[in-house]
Image 1: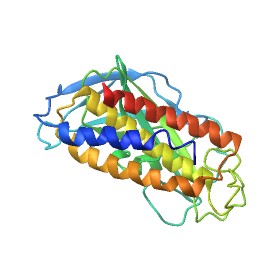
Image 2 (image 1 turned 90 degrees about the vertical axis):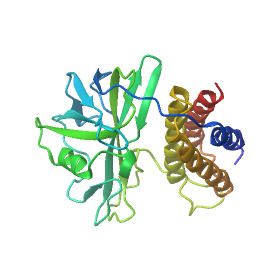
Image 3 (image 1 turned 180 degrees about the horizontal axis):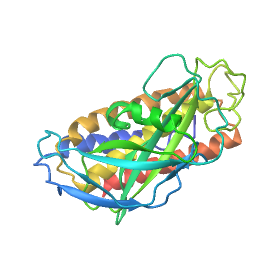
Image 4 (image 1 turned 45 degrees about the horizontal axis):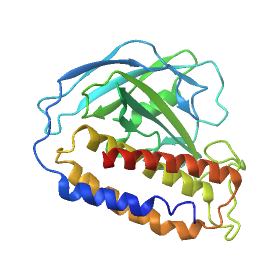
Length: 277
């Protein structure tokens, strides 16, 4: 698809440069940091149902850990609005069973010059919350109750503020008759192949873009970080995969699709700019 061609080759080229330029010792981080919410509003699909508790949050790097990761725990309050989706068959991203929906929370941590750490709401495993039980606990809270959700973070230098993000995605196992997609908007139709889910493509592509921006920020802050080498290998593979996928979505030309695609590509341009500095 013509809209995708402006990014992929440049991404692979820039990431390849990282593969041969990384070296040196990892810069030691401070052992603790205190941050405040940039806003108590939670971005994304669950923002109407939850609010971040406004206070200072301190987390400390574990000096005994080989990765020297820190654990940040954020307190979240359940608002008074009823859920617009059933919660009896719902699982966090990265877990499976009998579910109608997957849900998740992410965190963006900011320094003086912008975002330093990005963990998206649809991530799982190492890039997701510390425990899927944290997500489940928030979903089960009653109105007015508060709970906590945690992330493991190994970059704490210069962090000042943070913001939570959220997402809900309709599962392929769902028996619901709703025609909405995970963003609550109408599904996009591929004009050349109606079996292709254009919106699913955008969700995956945006997840890759967020990972790419996070990688570029990591490189910008400390180009000699040796962990960049393995990260760059993964980014290089992912960039090639998304480049190959574009032909399958050549018919996704809905106006809303193109607008969302442009926003995703803006993230990739931002990441490429970080790597080129």
